[in-house]
Amino acid sequence: MEFMGYVRPDGRVGARNYVAVIPSVTCANDVAAAICRQVMGTVTYLHHQGCCQLPPDLERVTDALISLGCSPNSAAVLIVSLGCEGTDHERMVKEISATGKHVEIIHIQELGGVSKAIQAGTDIARRLVIEASGIQRQPVDVSNIVMSIKCGGSDTTSGMASNCVIGYVADKLVDLGATVIFGETTEFIGGEHLLARRAVTKEVGDKIFQIVNDMETRAKSLGCDMRKGQPTPGNIAGGLSSIEEKSLGAIMKSGSRPIQGVLEYTQQVTNQKGLWIKDTPGREPEILTGMACTGAQVMMFSTGRGAPQGFPSMPVIKICGNPNTYENMKEDMDVNAGLIITGEKTIEEVGEEAFAKLIRTLSGEMTKNEAIQYVTSIDIQCLGPVI
Image (cartoon, rainbow, N blue to C red; front, side):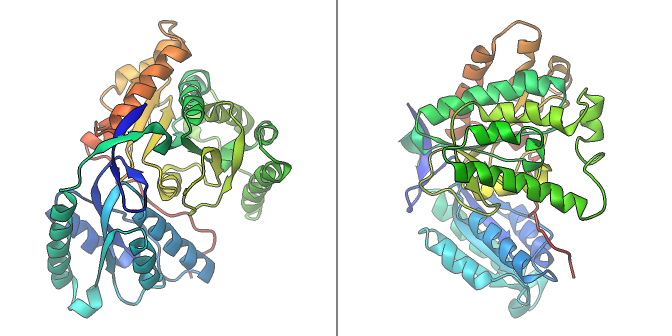
């Protein structure tokens, strides 16, 4: 089985062919955004980090931006640096260039300010886009797929329908030799023992318990538990009574195959195959960034109450488990898993429909959030304070 993708110099395969304009610090966001407004075929990552942070977080942000730049969905990269930030923009250039991509960098302060930087960046981005436009899609095996998965805006139908559909697709991809990444460590709580049973080794199982314990400890360090933050007020209104109940539904989207290991937040997937966990929070801007950092070409996103947002460079396919939500938000939802709730279709039937949509999306078909450009949900999870 094949899809039509862009084969990159490092052997990875992209589903999109963007030029990524990456601000190395929040102070460069407006310049990066202005460049993208001027040049079609570009995307940017408007984050809020890169300065006045502790060294581990500055390294984490640098690593995240490198991983985003290495994504196979981008053909070339323009880094927009202020010039005095805490992130290591020189390492960004070096490590992204190592993938074989064309990488350029501009420095706002050295160029003489914002207007000159926008002009210089626009000229460079235009050249990179024209260069990238000559790259053609070609047939590639489905084993090249790296799919990330998530649930958000969940209600009782998520665990009964849409998460089950994603679990079906996840199992199918793993059986075809592809890679599936899931996260939302907060939403393992109460179900972590079920995931640990599926670990390929005791060490992997112990790591699953560890990341859950670390997440709980971080919340307790502020003198409180997770209630009101998780489950969210929307989750509770949708019928989810506790984080344990939410977790039992959330982990359904991982399917049933063995868990190969646990990835750190900024870690890229290289030769890893099968089902993997990535240690992430549950909130969309941070988890979508972490999943894009893996090099995932696409995300499959389950929702019951209706979460419409996407991501700049990674198509996000919305699988809706609630038939009422689907009818109310059909311009935002890609697949109607609510038909399982009404008894009109089985999990397997909707799973095959979702898989077909996945292959079409990887081959160039837009998701609904891409078509309306609802794709700016981006931020990088950091662990320490802004100082």
